[in-house]
Length: 396
Ligand SMILES: Cc1ncc(COP(=O)(O)O)c(C=O)c1O
Figure 1 (spheres, rainbow, N blue to C red):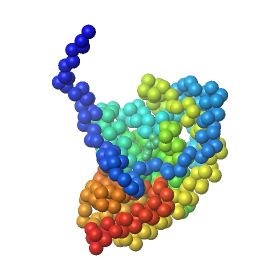
Figure 2: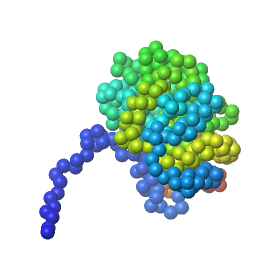
Figure 3: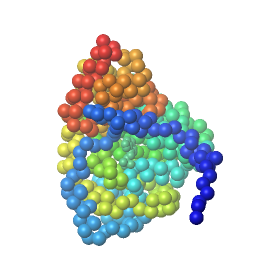
Figure 4: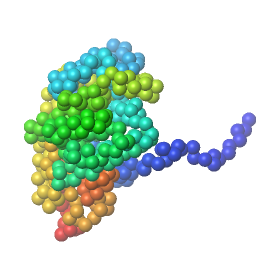
């Protein structure tokens, strides 16, 4: 039998997806991956391996035959640990039975949050530079991103005044992502309280991505938005295990919110995902129960690298904020006279150092590059030598 083949004349891709620009980060890494001897300050991922006792807990769960789905919402033991953590560490109280959902990373949690709450035409305020997934995920719901530009001069943090000025009758939600990817900036408790007050006044939802909450420096105390007066009933708190516990590949995160919002997110999650990976959930219980020393060890090492990178960038004349959190620096490259795209492209090809052009992170990103210091100290040192050489040629 022969099967007749005809060439499709349509590409079948939806208009919504066709409208999403290709990821600036991915394009860059496709090139870097084909080159030899590249030092990557690019990918935002810990260079540490997941702590051994966490891996052992996952293995033990497999040995006990825990290989099936879990409840859609996630293992109740894990949700209890998560609720305990948010209450004791951050002062935000949630009922593990109805106000917590375990997700496949904060990536899924963010997608669920916007899909469960945003209708076509709703405006969503996003301070930028920001993590690259926010605008496309909002766009897929038919929502409209209203960016707020933040700058180095204000520490790359949004103010309540800026949020108030961006509000229109169509505004539905504000996305906050602090400590911030790509800048490392963090918002003070006082300013957050003012932002919450604006949200209360205009009856807005806050989606707060706090995935870097454990990675803070110089005694910076992270404030969980939903712990602030008036915030709980209008906030979806997102957090996860990827960064603090070096568990990016396990794909595990969670959302905490009032039960009707978790219920709405559940509707999307149960059909789109069913449940988060089971062995990862057992690993996460172990991470929360016994992983504190590991977090502190990794944060101490990030802090050492942060000092190295900030000091050396400043010595090279690249202005750079000393970030309060996450594991990124976002130096200005303006003195090179190059765009951030040209800078990153040439640095990669001429010196084999991968950094991300600031332009991919939205408004306020041009004129900067993002460098991730979740890379070995010696490698960062070598990358900075190469960067110094590069600058010597570009702007002697
Ligand atoms: C701000 C921010 N949110 C979410 C994520 C994705 O996290 P997860 O691995 O939990 O999906 C990242 C990863 O880089 C991030 O930087």
